[in-house]
Structure formats: C-alpha cells, structure tokens
Length: 314
Image 1 (cartoon, rainbow, N blue to C red):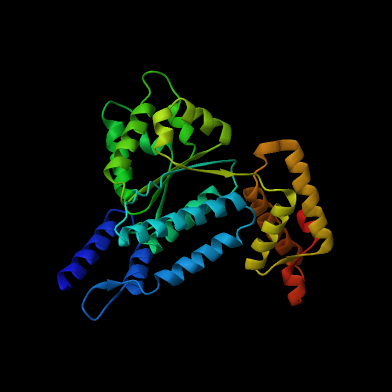
Image 2 (tube, rainbow, N blue to C red):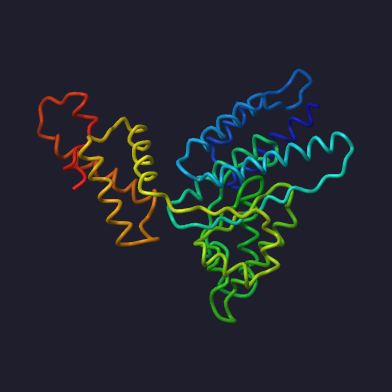
C-alpha cells in the first residue's frame, strides 16, 4: 500500500516536471488527496469539487445546449460504471469533442471546467487545460511536426488539450505539414485514449468544412457542441456578473448606454462583434474611466466608488 502511495505521488511529480501541472495545482492535489488508514490515496473532496464545478457551469449565462450535453456525458459515465459493476458489457468512453462557435462564446471556459469535472469523476488523472494552436503543432521540416505533436501530447496527458482554430491545420499547399499534424494528433488520441481528451475548436462554418474533408476525423470526435452567440440581454447579464465580482455596479443610465453600445457593435460587426470578450473590454475601460473621473475628489462615498456612470461608458 505504501508503495502504491509513493508511485502515485511520483506520477504527480512527473506531471509537474513535464509542465502538465503548475506548482499551485501540484500542492492543491497534495492537500486534497489524503491517505487513508491503510495507505491508499483517497479523494474525499472529489464529490464537493464536482458539485462546485457543475454549479459554476450552471451559473454561466446561456449555453443551455452545452450544459445539457455535459449532463448527458456524466450520466453516461455513471451508467457505464453501474453496468460494469453488474457484469454487463460496456463501451469505452470516447470523450474527444468538437466545439463550434464564434470568439467569446465560452468555449475555453467550458473546456477548463470539463477538465475539472472529469478529474473529479475519475475520468482524467490531472484535469488541467492545455491551450494550443497551429503553430504549436505544425513543424517547418520533415519529422519536425510529429515531434512537436508528441511534445504537446506529453504535456496534455491526464487533462484536456484545446486546439483553437483547428481548421487551420487543413490549410496550406501540398508542402504544408498540417495534415501530418492531424494524423499525429489522431495517433496520440488512440495511444492515450484512457487519459486524454482532445477538443478541436473554431468558427462553426470553418469547422464544418474542416470535418467534411476529414470524414475519418469526424468519427473520432463523437461529441459536438455548438456555442451560439449571446443575445444583447445575455451580454448585459454577463457584464453585471463581471461587475458584481469586482464590486462595481451600473447606474440606470449607464446600463441603458451599455445596451446601446452592444447593439451598435452587433449591428456593425455582426458575428465578429466579440461576445463576452467585448463586454469585458467595455467594462474594464469603464472602470478605468471612472477612476480618472474620481481621481480629483477628496471624499468619495462607497456608492461613488462602486457606481459606474453613463459618462464612463461614453
């Protein structure tokens, strides 16, 4: 039993050295995973972590279809465990996913939460999120691409690899190594299917085209999540959550101004208006402008310090 405990801690330390765990995450795991009386590791807090993370997911504005699909995946995992315990045939959990949506629709946030959820469920060893893009996978000469992909797979083991703008791997001429990167990713998925989840993400139309020219790839990613653009009302809700976390609030006229700014931006830029990223930028700029506005006041009330006025959003 003692050897099993030491082997497990060695595995955690190796993950730290390989860059799959930050120092803070490493010590968090040491604190959360407590030895039982017989020397085995026990994660007493896994159920609490799972409940808290699911609550965090549910608190996200919108994403109704995404939340429903996450619950389906968790229910499926539970059912496979029960079937296995009763001697029934089970299917391996293929958890690789396709995320389709515009920037700022929550794709990276959901991927991060999924890593924590699947770690708490025992489906992943570490549960960290590794964000990469084409430049991290595609090499410049023969043999370089496979090496780069292997390095990223090694960093991602035990967690989630999130490939943003994945459709860019299919771009380029005959001398481009993007296709080799795709093949190497697939091999990495197959070789580490029990301790790795790969998520390919990007714009909906580009991802649909990307998958249509790679039919074998589509079958290896059974879970597809569509991230719709937020409505103006949802974007205002997101802004209010951001402000609440920072202990700020909007005056009535400032809130009306925010609606106006978001509507103008959506009308002008359409699908590329930025979604939640746009809201964050507007809020952060308004907070800076409020600071300038109040900088010459000798006495500021709590309301003054918390309230963003219409002029702060001009």
